[in-house]
Image (cartoon, helix red, strand yellow):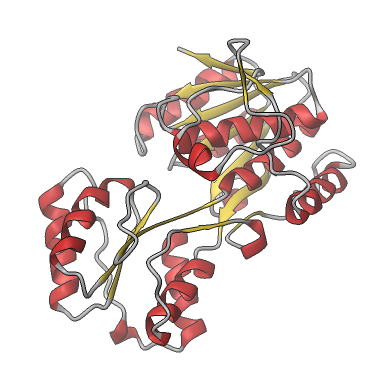
Length: 319
C-alpha cells in the first residue's frame, strides 16, 4: 500500500501519465516463474525502469538485469546490486523505530512491551528494527522490557493473531509490530491497551489504541530514481535514505498519549536529524551479555543492513 502511494506521489511530482506506469500486483514473491513473467511483461510493454517491492523478487531481478543491461532494475529491501543497472533501495527505518520506542516507553504502565516480528534474528532488517525500538524504549524507561514473538513469515494472519494474543495475555500494554496484518492494533484496542503501527498510519484501524505509526514515504525515493533516468544522471548507486530525506517518519502522536511524550520524541528527532544520534552508537550490550560496537563510533550501514543478528539487552524472545 505504501509503495503504491509512493508511485502515485512520484507520478504527480513528475507529471507522468497513467499510460507511462505499468503495475503487476499480487505477484507471489516465492514463485520465481511468476516473478519472471511479470518482469518480462513490463519489459515487453516498454518499461525503462522496473521496481520490485518485495524481498523474494531479488534473485530474479538480478538475473534479468544481466539479460537486459539497458533497463534499470531496482529492488526494495534485500541486499544485492551490480552497481550498474541493478540497484538496491531501502531506508533507515530504524530511526523511526527508535522514536516509536520512546513513545512506547513513555506510555507503558506494566513495563512489558510486546513486538510481533515476521522473522527471527537471522534477518537484520527485522532484528535491527526491534533493537532500535528497544533502545528508544530504554532511553526513557530503562525498567521496561520488550517481549518479541516471531511468526517466521512476512504475512501469516493466523500466526500474527496468535502472537498478538499471547503478548497481550502476558500483560504487555503496548504492542508494536513488523508484520503485515492489523491484529496487533485491533486486538490491543479490544483489550484497552496501546499499539504502535507500521508501514502506514494504522490509527484508522485502532483509533483508541494506536499511539503512532512508523511509516514510509516511498515517493521520496521513486521520484529521485525516475528523475535520474529522465535526466540521464543514473549512476547505479544504491539508495539508503532516512529521516533527512523524508523517506521514513512517525505519524503524529495521539492526543491520549502520556504527557511529555511529544516533547521527548521531538528532542530525539532533532538529535537524529542533526547527526548527534545515529541510534546504533558506541558500545551496545546485547541480551546475552555480549557487547557490539565501538566507543565513539556508529555501526556501519553494511552492518545495520546485513549484520545485526543480536538483540538489545532489554529484549526477550518468547516461544
